[in-house]
Length: 250
Length: 310
Image (cartoon, rainbow over all chains, first blue to last red; front, side, top):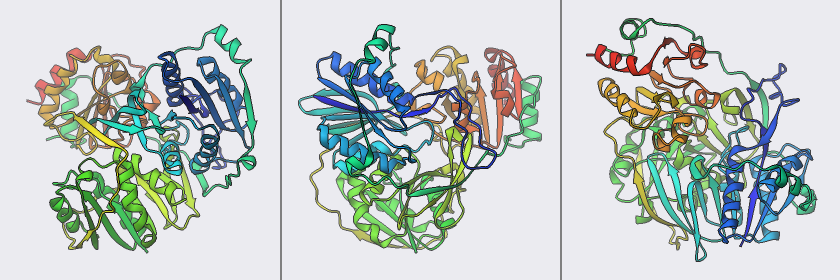
């Protein structure tokens, strides 16, 4: 079974981003970039499926700048077999990425696409669901456990009140939540090996996909600052303040 | 111009998130219709018809909507879409799952997690864990939107008298089978709609210590939440998680106990009206946004606080 794992290059989760003074966006120059953490979980899950003998080949795919090759190399170092970069200088919004991934999936015919539920930069939480819709495949989002057997995926997924278990026939799209697994660190020998693994580059045009953005960003601003820093001495003073000053308890 | 709000409900009642979503629809303007897809959901449909500002309720009745899937909701909504300028879902687990599927089938962008409506085509949404707010304009004919519930005060539950129209449900063989749900049983208010939320973090050291928060929560009729660190460490289930990738809350009072205040956690609670932080580390970033910080050992302070509340 082939598994396709889309991965996104994002500002590292430890970086506190700054809004550009001209309000055009967020400053991403000279900041540390990493693989989106949820995608890392997806790569790890695919590798575990391969280790269990369920998956036979793992293809990592990324859409974006040439620099996404680094992200793909990370996926290869964790254990993906080969990689595809859909290279574009354009701003790629979730619908466009879903269309690019659809084109790749149609070419590669994977039985499973597994990817992060959301990227931590635009926080959109859309691409997996959109890809499933475009392929007319079932979706199992926010997965915390995935079992594959007899052409079906049994997926435990995080819902607002607890957990839900779905059975979806393959091929299907699964998006990962935090508790699915803890990704391994790529070892140095594997990082070296990853450099030799195949990485193909294609352009959106070659896939016949129009990536023109549908949303235009008019401005980006910093959220209003919260004035914090107040202190109280003990529980007694806290209760008094909450009652008499903030008036949030009776 | 008409907006369709896809309601989240439990068949008996409308979930509070639906009220926030209707409120966003009111800001957009025009007529508001609410879709209630459920199983034995007459009561929920009737409740939807009473929401202020709603002019029509579409009630789709089918056993498969007892546990709706993204597929079944999308199959219902997509054929209705030509009649609507805007399609809104709450940015909850339900809405986030179904909405992008609807948008992609309509070949339109989705605008996720809006917190404000600037105009009929322009909306404000947080990005980068809420560290930036983007104003985005949609060029698509239809706008498919998820609404961050904390961005909009709920619409009034009474005041409307909408007509209820039965909707025929397209017959379809469901490929996706819902095998079951394990819901966290709790007498407490729901995390996302509670007036007071008490959250615990890594400082609680283990799951058993979360019990300590329960006594305090009982006194305050509060919901209990947790930081991602506490969830990752296995102290509590994931549905407790408040933060960028968990639930977004904005209660009147948020009490963070043993939580250092990582960016990802702040993203989920920094719009709370009053924030209290209890932490032994005076340098913890949570204190920078707390209205009332109390530096000390939570294992001493929490029982004292519970006692103080009588």
